Length: 110
Image 1 (cartoon, rainbow, N blue to C red):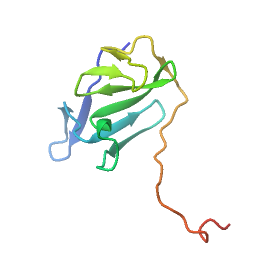
Image 2 (image 1 turned 45 degrees about the horizontal axis):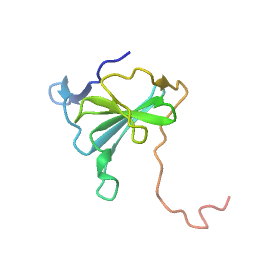
Image 3 (image 1 turned 180 degrees about the vertical axis):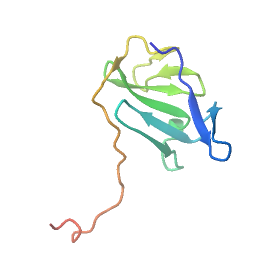
C-alpha cells in the first residue's frame, strides 16, 4: 500500500520533472483508466483545491490525498490517515468532466 503520494510537473523548457508540493487551486483526478486536472474556480467550494482525487473508497466515501496535510482523507466519514490502508480500489472507474453548457431546444433535436 502507498505511504504517500507525489505530484510532478514537466518543465517544458528544461524537459525535466519538478516535484510539486502545492497544487494551489488545482485538483487532479486519477484512476487506472483516466486522469484529468481542473482548476477550482471562485464559484466552487474552496476546499477542493490542492487535492488529488483517487479511485479508492472507504466504505461509500471517495478517498482523496491532500497536499496541504500530506494525508489521505474522505469528506464524510472522517477518514484521515497517512496511507490508504482499509480502502478499496475500484478498477473500472473513470473520471468524466461534465460540460455545464446549456443546449438549446434545436440542438437537442435529432
